[in-house]
Structures are given as C-alpha cells and as structure tokens.
Image (cartoon, rainbow, N blue to C red; front, top):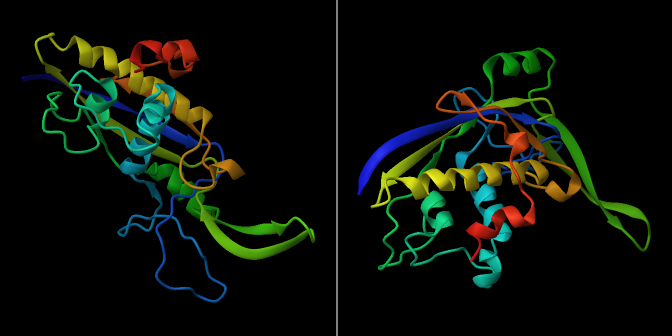
Length: 234
C-alpha cells in the first residue's frame, strides 16, 4: 500500500440559523445558561468540533446508501475492503479481516473566522441565549423552560478536511472516486442540520468557498438525488 497524495478540502461554514453543539455543564447556576455551547478554552470563542462534522456527514451518507437498514440501525462496520464509507470514515469497529487500509479523512476542528468573531464581539453577539419551553398540549401552557446558548446566524467557521489517496493496486482510482461521495455528504448536510435541536430550526449551514488543493469546487452542482447514491449503495 502506497500513500500517493493528501488532498486538502477547505472552505468556510456559514451559519444560516443558530447553532448549538453542547459542551455540557456540571453545575446549574440560578439565572444561568442550562446548555452552553462548546468553546475554545484559550479564546473563549465557540468552535465546531471536527468529530461533530464527521459524524453527521457519515450518518447522512449511511442512511442515503442503505447501510443503516442493512445493519439494523447500528454503526456501520464491514469486512469489505472496497466499501467507500469504511474507507472514507473508518470501519467503525474492529474487523480482523478488514483490508481496506487506514481512514482516508481527517476532520479538523472548525474555528471561527477571526475578523468575524471580533465583529460579533463588538455587537455583543458572539453567542446568544434562547429560551426553550415544552408545551402541555392538553392545557396549552408552557412548561419546563430552559436557557439554550447558541452561536447566532451569520457566524463563519473555517473548515479543513485532509483526504488521503492510497494506491491499493488500482493506482488510487477508488479513493479518487470516493471524494465525490464525501462532497455529496457535505451537500446533504446543507439540507439537514448540524448539532442539536435540528428539528426546531437550529444548525442550518452553508459550505462556502470550497476548494480541493486550492481549486474551486461547485458544491451547488453536486447531485444528491436518490439515483446519485445507487453506485455507492449496498
């Protein structure tokens, strides 16, 4: 197995609606935030963990290619060394007879664009507080209010994905072809949501200024119709 090339997929993630990726909290403060967002401990600025981006794209692709149904709703793992999902994202569990090689992608944490962060700080809007309530449908009253912290719409984060191409007897052709599947997953994410509370309108994003090794990629032209996934399905 020969590592032929490492491609860099990069660009900007623009928030179209507020984003909540939780940091968890060990303490409850009166009048404080119940669910804070994850932040860089050095700057205090919010960021998007690479694991969140990777996990959501992978899940959307597993649903779109029939792997969730084939695996009874469990995380995908296979002994097929040619499986594109396993190659791109990792095999998901230990398989002694898996010969597909190492994980092809490496997702970096996505840090907020510095000049955008400073602009938001000047406006006192680096994060926002949103009060969520549950509704008693019988009585028509609000119950269990909670304070959610979100990164507001308009924030921008830089993203970087390293993609390795290995020669496994095919001169790297399969890894080159599988990049299309990764781009399809990114486009699917634009139609879905990142982070928590997606069904309530959180986490709508847009990938902007996408490049592969500096060359522009038209993500809007990526086909995510059902037939587009047929060759990657199982």
